[in-house]
Image 1 (cartoon, helix red, strand yellow):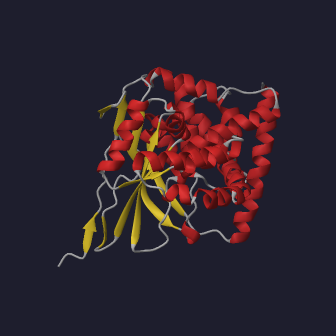
Image 2: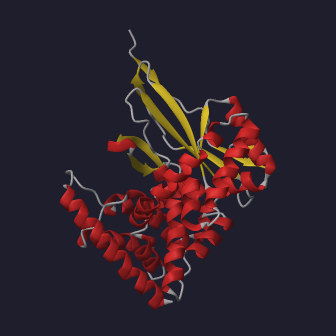
Image 3: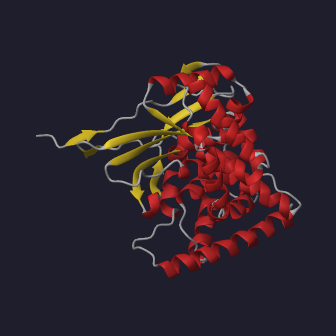
Length: 342
């Protein structure tokens, strides 16, 4: 007797251009990109409820609220109506909460929009309570953003130095290990992608190359540089925060991402999540790996395998606290170096 179910994605990799779906990247054309993050889930115990959750980025949220690119948002709305796919705007709302003074009004506007377009008013009824939760959690969210951004000042600094992508990865890895920093997979992979784009821009579409050059520009003012790094951090956080648990073993969450950002689109095509590790309080970590069809796999796989930091035993709470403090000092130091180099 079979005691297991096999979980399959509801939606494969999809690119949407002016409301029309295609399965291949459309190059430099503005598009909505939908991608499942788990490449294989295998079997789950029979009777496990599977929640398919689509995390949208802030660009798509803004398109919905401002009635832009209506052909693409109509496609997304029809997809949500035709499949048991949950819409998850929380990450986009978190990003708004950090930078946008109108974030509360945007939340209420979104709840109103959901009511009108989906004839479901639960979001509107709960909007005030959810707004309080986001506001109360703003400080903790900010700390998480700072943690995820910890490598980025050093990545930007190293990006602007001479040398190959391989040598820059070795440099970054050496700093992480020598200074006893937390080992963060996604920022390390993002650094590898930025280094490779600079090394071999002809391998990538022009819009990505332009986006990378814009995002890696050094500022002459510390405050401006910090804001630029925080903006880049959201590109790393989107796939990280798309992983979460339902808080019960009886339910599994299958994550997807929908994004219009060229860098995020290409980044999530370069990596994939093999396993979701369930942590306390509904949190989750992903075991990330290179996508076999990506440029990082083709060009940098041996270097990444050599230099990706790994730990072979769990860390204590005291060790984690020390490493987070080290990371804050490390980020501040390289932020100063970036500004000085400018």
